[in-house]
Image (cartoon, rainbow, N blue to C red; front, side):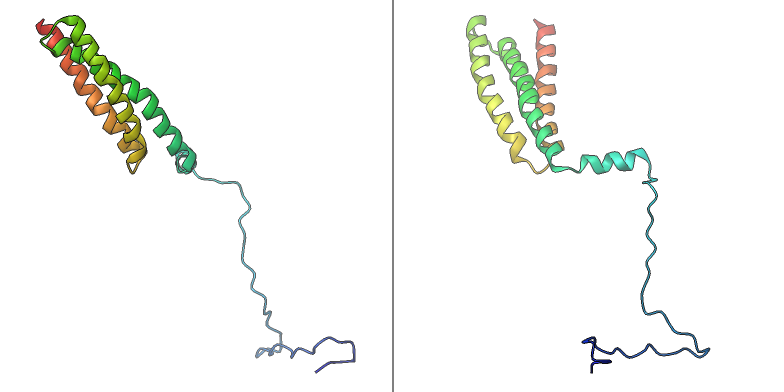
Length: 138
């Protein structure tokens, strides 16, 4: 199968078309090398799908959201408990420490970072509204 003794295999010639011209057997695929012409929000959306942003968001939810939840919890207990004010403040602070730890666990236990934020901010808002309502009554 060698042609001319040079060690190269002899490949059969491609079939000729009806007009006698050869058919090119290579497939050329056009490549678009222009810069990305999409809008800014689709590029920004691609940026938000990076995994480290989810970890950053959950970390911020655990730290900032947990602190806000603990602060509103301590304030709510200080206003809501019908015991001496000093005892109510201490009880609220003890519960707030546990609640802050639970908020950090919640931030990393949920499926999405959005659910972590919502699960921390809704109780924070409810405790804050309860504190305002009870503070207005006092």
